[in-house]
Length: 141
Image (cartoon, rainbow, N blue to C red; front, side):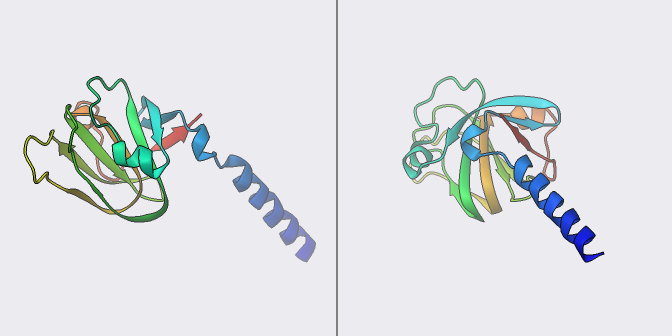
């Protein structure tokens, strides 16, 4: 019986390990059957720059962090409206901010509850696609 349990746990662990996606391999997010091509912001330099000065956003930018914590974003030097989708460690949307470009300092800070991922997409994308807090987010190659 112990061997059977050990075998089962080993297979379960192997299955979980094989199903994990390497963050650098993520190319798409999917929410409510909406597939979003992604640019990744993995380094602190990429995360600091974000979508500053970007005039046309064809998909989204995914910010990936090592831990789940409160995140603070702003729209300094961002020229297009964005939806900021804050995602927890269980891949559920924790909050959504519909953010407008910052025209004068101080720029508004958009804070989240605990989030491990932040997905920025074109403004009103979440409204147009009926994306809400609590929805599941899938990441794929």
